[in-house]
Amino acid sequence: MRTLPPNISHHPDGYLVRVQRGEMLYQAFVPKSHREALAEAIRRRDEFLAVCGPVARPKFRTAPRSNTDVVGVSTSTHWHRGQPYSCFVASANPQPGRHTTRRFYFGRTQTRDVAFKAAVAWRAQITGQNPATLLPKW
Image (cartoon, rainbow, N blue to C red; front, side, top):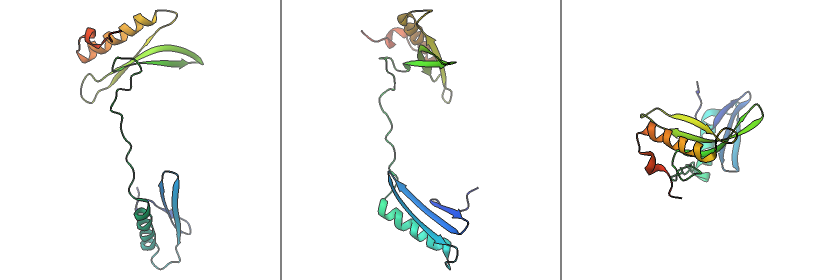
């Protein structure tokens, strides 16, 4: 359980203040011999935060992460015991809070087109959509 404020860590000889934004690191050490060491560490941390500003929040992707033209179906390579196996990965959310994924392999056993259509059909069945509307028009 954390008892110290954020960006302040305990050191055997005092407190270490570290604030990092990107590649820029602001740090200070406040020894225990200081009369109010924790208050001084908090003051230093607040100075650093005023200089470097708030944490930049990452921007989330809005486009689908699929590398095919079907949302939820991607091409991937699954490695098993040092051997690569080409496959399509289909993922779906059948219910709120549930996520399921399935791989459809192609290569030696079946063609790429058969595996792709099977992945699209499986995803359509799980999500309750029509598979004909999911297939790309190429």
